[in-house]
Image (cartoon, rainbow, N blue to C red; front, top):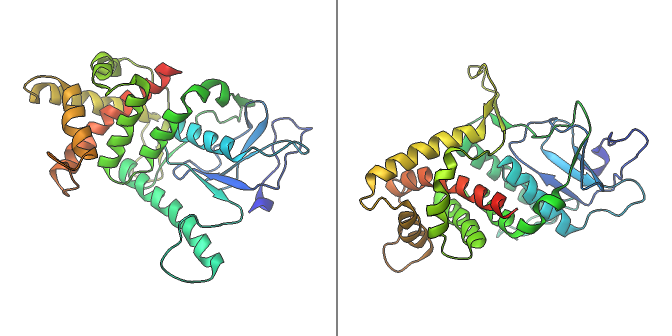
Length: 300
C-alpha cells in the first residue's frame, strides 16, 4: 500500500516520505475530503485516493512519526470527527490470533479488513447506512496546519477513553467509557461535575461536523451539523428524564443506576437485554457523549 501514497502538496518544493510503516483508518470519513493538511509543523497528513486510509508522513530525510505519536493522532482525529479510528501496520500482522488456522497473509489481512468492516457496521448503526462525515479542516482553498500536540497533549488519556467508546458496538459499553472520561476529568465519581455542567449542553459550542449521505432520496438543502443533531436529542432526553425521575437528579441516575449497574455484577445489574436496557441507555449516552466532550475541552 505504501507505493499508493500521492505526494503531499503543503509546499510545492517539499517531497514527503512514501516508506510508510503504519496507516490510520477512519471508516465513515468521506473519501478525498483531505486536501493540503499538516500536523504540528512536522508532518503531512494525506488521504489515499478514494479510501479511508490516511497517512502521517514527514518530508524526505526526516524521521517517521513514532508509534505513540500515531496513537495520539488517531485519537485526536477520532475525537474531532466522532468516528472510530484505528492503526493498520504495513506488514499486516494480526494482533489477535484466531482459532482458525491458515496462511499468515490470509489471517493477517482478514484481521484488519474485519476491523474496518466492524467499525463500518458501528457507524451504520449510529449514523445510518450510506452516511459519511467530511474532514473538518479540508485544506483545499488554503493549506491547513493542525497543532494537535499543542491542543490535546494534556488530555491524551481522556481522548483514549473517548475513542474507545466510539469503537463499542453495544450502548452499555459505550456509555461506560464516556463516563470514565468524566471520572478522569473530575477526579471523582462525576456526579457533582454532571450537576454543574449538564445545563451547558443547551448553549455549548461543539463546532461543526458535516454529516452527509449517499442516499439519493436524502438530500437536505442545507448542510447538517452532526453535533446539532446530538444536541437536539440530548435536550429532548434531559427534558424527559427531568419529568420521569422523582428526585429530578439525573446525575444520581447516571452514576448509581447506569454507570454502577453496567460496571458491577452484584446487584441491580444492567445487562444486554435486547430490549428496554438497550433502548434507554442508547438515548442516555447521547447526553453523556456531549458531557464527555465538554469535560475534555474544559480540561484543554
